[in-house]
Image (cartoon, rainbow, N blue to C red; front, side, top):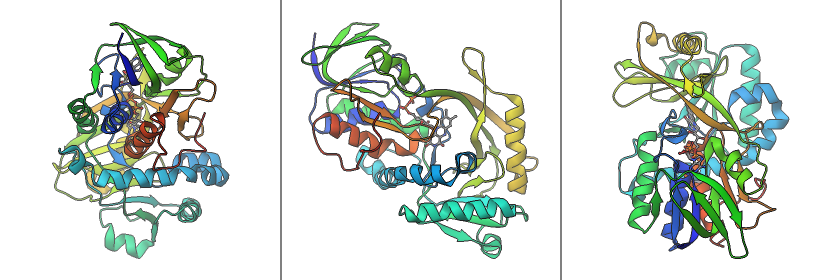
Length: 373
Ligand SMILES: Cc1cc2nc3c(=O)[nH]c(=O)nc-3n(C[C@H](O)[C@H](O)[C@H](O)COP(=O)(O)OP(=O)(O)OC[C@H]3O[C@@H](n4cnc5c(N)ncnc54)[C@H](O)[C@@H]3O)c2cc1C
């Protein structure tokens, strides 16, 4: 059995990026994916690059939660800096655009909450501008007239979820990655010198293991005797027919779940975490789709009469407090967790490089202490 420095379970963005950064450091790396690359959340998401604290949990869990959650903002910021150089580093097109993100509020109550959230973000070092009604009229004329306040964060944007994980994997393979598709890890045992992983194709041994199994990470961790509270939720996204360019920003609305952006080709991507249905697999929920579209139309009137051309549903990895679970499992030395919930697309570059560094005995460039199991 070959002995690898590092075995990574899960061929989504977290796994592919960890593999790339570990290969770049000269390690021998195995990536085990039970189906094929990028078929999970990483290839089905909305492609938003976030930095602001999401409004939904802020209004449900409150400012104390947000102050704790603000510890993740430096991870997002580090990742966004890394996204900026990623097309050069990986030598390919990632559909990257960073024109900023705008969170808008329409009621007095939401305006007050948005102001309070921005204070917490600023205290954590995130640059966010507040745009009053005049500024919104000038800088965001596409908005409905009822919008009263906006929080603008200039580093937010979007990238192409179809492109990123496969390109990371391609570059990792060029650096020596052993990628095994159709390799469902079904058992893990820890020994003196490392781990034996039983996969559907064969058994493998590795000195260290990274669990990057996304929404299935709890099941994978349990194979190593570790309890991890990762949730799996079915959510959905829709895309409309093409229209002339009107929306330069990633747009959020505090009133109800909404993320909205316009692709370079003109289609609007409408998401925000609306629930899909589960039939053993996720399927689009029509009520969610209709509600999501009508909110988008309330916020951006130009969307009236625009038809949806495609909707899809997928499983997202979640945690109840929205915080990631990152680093070495205390009870099982050598077993690492790279589990970034809800906004793991944004966070993957810097976090995955940090996990690769940690697993290979280096000090990571971003501080993951405080995010351990
Ligand atoms: C509809 C939707 C919209 C989203 N929008 C955004 C967004 O706009 N911005 C943002 O930042 N984030 C967004 N997210 C969240 C983001 O996509 C995820 O947090 C991120 O992609 C998680 O990456 P991952 O690599 O950890 O998991 P995944 O991409 O799910 O990859 C996990 C992989 O592990 C494999 N695996 C599982 N078990 C095993 C096993 N036993 N053996 C081998 N392989 C296994 C799976 O097959 C899968 O390929 C969205 C998610 C969804 C679903």
